[in-house]
Image (cartoon, rainbow, N blue to C red):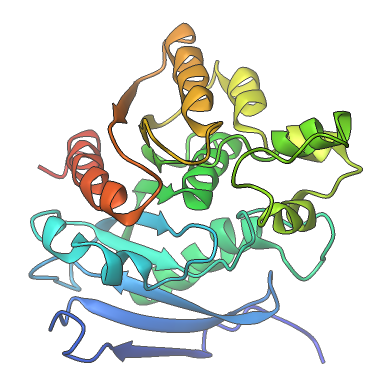
Length: 288
């Protein structure tokens, strides 16, 4: 049977009133050809949503082990976004690292994020495609920066909270020092990293390394970049990586904001830092 992108095969549900009592929250599902699966997405609509007007969109990504419900269930995102006239799209991307897997041809998650998902969302909501933002935490923070740098001119704003931006460089480190321990905290997630990036194609890893991408693309129009990381983050490589990354942004004269705050790799930190992220996004995208 011929395979095709089935926009007709979707389901839209209003989540129960028990979930914050908010009819702004919709749960949607659709079949993505890029990952050969039915994918689930949570949509947070603006207050006083009006289907007759178009809205900017924020793609808000989850971390490793997370899902599409994390942001609405584990933070006060609904409250924090009440005054922001934008549609927030929170997709499930499994533990994919938001890339087209080097080892699994059925895991085209970059294509899912940049083609299938936007096409589906644009088919059911009035999206202003000239004003798109992307952000996320941990694995999603890496994914937001990586996708923004791999697709220059697409996003106006990219946000990274505790981003795992040492990925996929950690693979090169492990290959170079096979007897050394895997960096702090990354042992349990290392198989997912190898599944996503492989361990035999350095070019592919470089093509998804935010440091290499920034060096390559610095002369292009890049989004405003917002980064935040906890000083006590248990992934000990993340703090120095963010210092290096923001040093590079400054060197290349890019617009960015960097928060280095007391905090660890947890929801308390992300609930705190999603607030200034949303406020800065609103300014950059002229939502206020």
